[in-house]
Length: 192
Length: 431
Image (cartoon, rainbow over all chains, first blue to last red; front, side, top):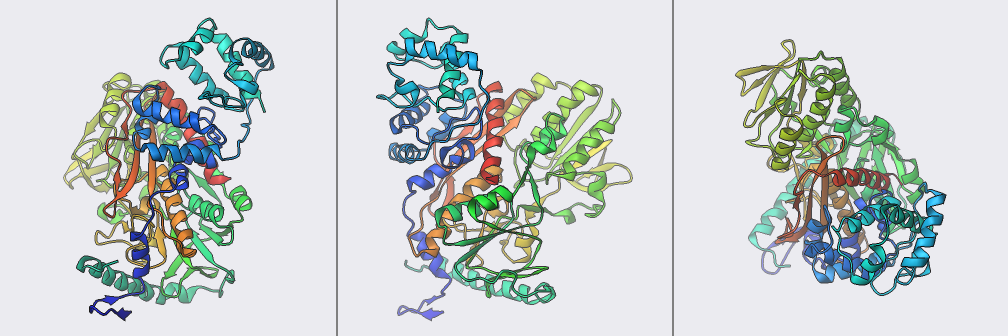
C-alpha cells in the first residue's frame, strides 16, 4: 500500500482495476472470437449446417451481416445477433475472417452429383462464381470448399423464394430443379 | 484513474478478500499436500482450473494469443460430458458418447499441460494452487469451476445418497444415465416430478427442455404417464411462450406446470417432495434440481460475494473483485446480463484470455464483446433458440439494445443448426 498526496490509500491490487478502466474498444479479434463457438475456431466450422467463414471475402461477410440485420436475408438466429453490431464492427469482423486460412471440411459427397453439378455450374453459374467458386467476384461469396449442408439450406431458401435474388441470379437459377441445385451444392463442396 | 469513495471501498474489499484467502489456504489443505511443487515454474504461467465449456477455451486462447505463456489446465476427470444436449440423452435420442470429449488433442495441439486432480486450496498471496499431489505456482489463475449445489436448502436431502434415488442430472454424466434408466424402468401411468430452483441457476431453459424430452419419450412409450413440474420461479424463466406453445402442440394434457411452487424438502422414503415444507407431491420418478452456487473450489477460496453464491468479477477482465490475479468465468461468476450457459462460458473464456494476455504483457486491456446462443429441443425435430450480444456499459455487462431475443416460432431448421452448434462448440473445446 502507498499513500497518495491527496490522502487516499492506494493498494497494489488496484493496478488491475485501473488498467481495466482504460480498456480499448473491442478489437476485431475480440468481436470475431465470440462467433467461433458456432462457426469454429478462427472461422473454420466443424458443423455441417454452419458455414466456414475462414477465408471468405470481406465484402460477402459484410453484405451477409447487413442482410441479416435488415432482414433482407432470411435467418433464424443471425438476424438477432447481427443487430448487436455497428457497421464498423461488422466491417472489422469481415476483415478478420477474410484473413483466416480456409479449411476444407471433411464430408461425404456423391460423385455423380458432383459431375452433374459441374456441368450446371459451367453453363449457369461460372460467370459470377469464378474459378469453380474459389474466388469472389464483386459481392459473390466464395462458395467452394463449403459445407454441403449449409449450401443445401441456402439453395432451399432461394428455391422457396424465402431468400431474394438479384435479377441476373434469378434468371440463371429459376430454370434449375431442386435436384439441379443439390448437384451444384455437391460440386462446390467438392472443390479444394 | 481518480479514486472515488466507491472504488476506495471496493479496494478495501479486495484487500480483505485476499487476506481471507490466505488464511483459508493456511489451514489444513495446504499442509496436507504431500509433495512440494509439482511442476516447477520457470517462465510466465497461467493455471486454469476446470476443463469444461469455459476452462478449455481459456487455456486454448491464452496459448493461441501468446505461446510464450505456459498454460496448465487442471481437471478432475479424464473426459468431459456436455450438459447441453444431455436432456436428449434423457429423452433417448442421443448417446452419452455424442456428448463426451477428451483433452489429449487440445493439449497436444496447443501445448497445454494437463494435470488431472482436485484442487484442494488456493493461496492468493503466495499465488499457488494445491492438489493432493503438490502445489503449482501461477502468475494468473483462471477458475472455471462450474456449479455446486446448495443441498442444505432442501430439508431431508442427503448429498451422499439422495441423488441416487432422486437424480438431479444437472451435471452431465452418471446422473444423466440414472435419470434415463429410471424413466425406462417406470410403468406406464406413473408420474414424473421435476423441480426447478429459484434463478439464477445453470442453464435457464434447461429444466423446460428436459420436460419436453421426457414428455417426448413418455408420449411414445408410456402415454398414460404424467409430468408435474414444480417451479420455484413465478413463471418459466426462459423462452416461456415457446415452451408453452410446444407443450400445447405436442404434449397436450401430459404436463402440469406449477409456478411459484418452491420445493424446500424431500422425503426419500415416501418418494415425495414438499412445496414450501407443506404440500407433499409424490412421484414415481423424481428429478430434483437443487439450488446452486459457484463450484466448491471458488467458494472455499473466498471468491463468492455477499450473496455467498456467485463470484463477482470485473466486467472487462473477469478478474475477481475479491482477489488479485484470480479470474473467474462461466456459471460460477456474475457476468451481468450474460446467462449461465455453455456458450456464455465459451465467450467469457475468450474475453478473459484476451485480457489476461494483455495484462501479462503490460498492454491495455480490451473491452469485452460477448455472445450467447442457446438452443432447446421441443421434439427430436423442432427446436427454439435464444441469442444475445453483450458489451460493457458503465462497468457492467449489458445486452446490446435492440438485438438478441428468442425464435419467433418452433423450427425444424433450428434443430438442424443446434446439431452443428454442438459439433462446433465441442470441437472448439477439444482440438
